[in-house]
Image (cartoon, rainbow, N blue to C red; front, side, top):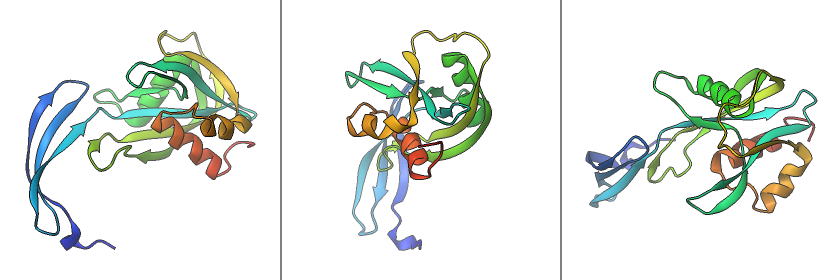
Length: 183
C-alpha cells in the first residue's frame, strides 16, 4: 500500500558531472520525517541482456570475461547498452548476434530491475531467448569467450562466486527459481 506521507520529496536536482557513460547529480530532498538534505544520484545508460537457452533447454550461453573496474573474472550473459531509438528487446537481439553470432528462435522479456535502487538510476532489462540459430561470426571481439554452460552447473557457479554481474545473477536466479529449462 502506498502512503504519500512516506514519500521522499525531491525539491530539485543539479548535475555535477555528465558524460555519455555516467551522470552524477545532487538532489535536494525532504524525508517523511521533515529532514531536508542533499543526496547524490548516479545515472548509467540502461542495458539489455539475454539468457539464451539452447534447443534442448540444457545449456545457457555465457561469456567468461575479465572486468577491469572490480578486477575480476566472471561468467556473464551477452548484452549491452540500449542505443537511442532502440527498444530493450531490439538491443538484446542486436547484442546477442554481435557478441555471439547466435539468434534466438524466440525472445521474451524475463525481468527488469534496478541494481542499486537507493542511489542509482540504471534500469536493467533481462530477456529469455529460447533456441539458438548460428547466423554468423561474432562482430564484437572483446566480449570474452562464449561457451554453452550446462544449466545444472548454474547453482555451483553462483555459489562459488563465479557469477558477479548483477544482470547475469538476476537472470540466472530467475530461470532457476521458475524452473525454466531442464534444470
